[in-house]
Image 1: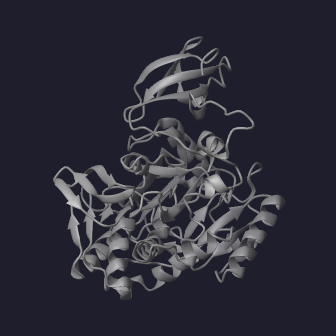
Image 2: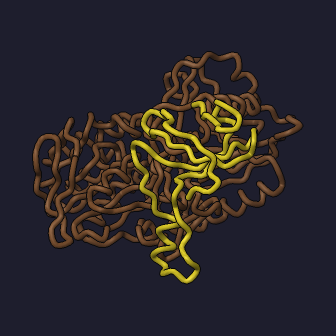
Image 3: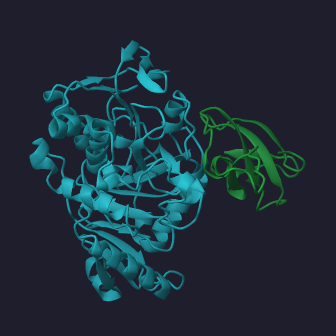
Length: 85
Length: 382
């Protein structure tokens, strides 16, 4: 799989570190335990398009939000994570 | 009703009929039986776990493996040829000694070997590697391998003879629920009513559970496996490299069967990526330099339910009559007999057996997680 980095161009996936689903919002410290459980443990895990965090670790070191189809690894979008949830 | 005609689903149906006298059972399989991970694993059986909650379950499974052929009257080729985890540092020796002691406290066997004892079994390893010298290993002699397809066929035949209906090419497309109670399942071949539905579809657990409105503590990841051309008997037993992700055994046909780590990102594609192929081969060459002289025959991938603590789930769900068997990570094959046995018990009696009592779905919310590696809620690191 090759990931298009918005700063460095298309690179092999071995240059990147994977974190997992993007868009998970950290609850407030006083939020109920169920909200924390959902944030830490529960995932949609779709077979299809997934927004996810990758870091271009062996490149520009920027965190990216990549939208990828988990069935085909086709990448629809790859943008810098700054300012995104 | 069992959703999923892999080893776990078929074993569940078999034990429902044999242990609980329940033979009005149907197993629904979207493809053909054993076409998922039951036919894609590296056939290893073992019970070398550290944590209470895990160890007694896998030891239960190993005891069922030992009697499986007589039980099923089917040659599942269970071969207790030993599983050896190599160690490469003093810290690793301490950790393995602790794990071995924990195993023995649970009635399993474990033996700490020094480097000479490892050399006597496997003289061809690279013992003097400057980076990864082999200092010894933790051996479980009762571990070994079995014939994965035969396990599927044996359980399927045993279940079928007890009156279980196995329906292939029948994909579940919906789960009908009324008043918080399961009513039945929608399938590609029509609606089927059922008072109890058990999900045993690891790899796709999140997708199927979502049909019942459940969101699981699971990510799907791809794990690859490899087999070389066949050679004369070379490697006795199963060996795992302790300084990287690599493990190897030899099939009765002569091929060296090996694998490594998951690719590390969510995937529903039953194929792997080249960087992981490289990583596995590098691990193999570091341990066993002669591996480089062999040609690779086949490579394949399977989709794993990677749970948030690296341990499985066999439990009831918040939906009455709906049961979940999921989260097997890359260790589902060895669990097949006890997974079926415990899931059948849980479904028949509506409560877990002591062997699977720790595999609760709510352990993530309660904090009673079973994290063998201690890496936290990071599925791609378990």
